[in-house]
Image (tube, rainbow, N blue to C red):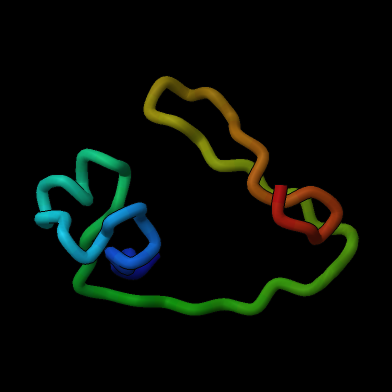
Length: 62
């Protein structure tokens, strides 16, 4: 959700948009923020191959 910040990457200020995309950065016309706040929340990301990657466990970043 939303466009990534280049400064989140090592040497991000010197990266092109293509290099940021190659490192997994996204480009979006829409940015959405949401609040998460509970020790009962588990969230998984889903890879292109269908694999699941823990993002949050019990309300904490994994």
